Image (cartoon, rainbow, N blue to C red; front, side, top):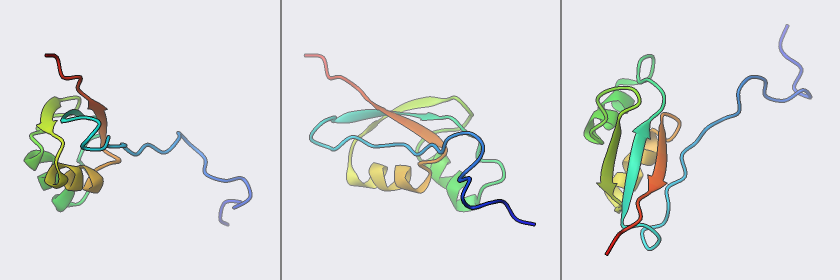
Length: 87
């Protein structure tokens, strides 16, 4: 017997990282908030390409199209914040 579709999604709320536009933030901080274990090998390789080797690790990256594409692939595993440029 399946779950009642009227009830909706049960469990914790869904998380997906939102990347700021390139004009809003030149650099972004990417933090891995979920493990790559149990996910496809391409997702684990994408985390490694972003420089994320361990759970809860943070890296600062340029906000360009290639990085945004990688983040889109693993958006459910990472959290993204903009970095304020100090002059």
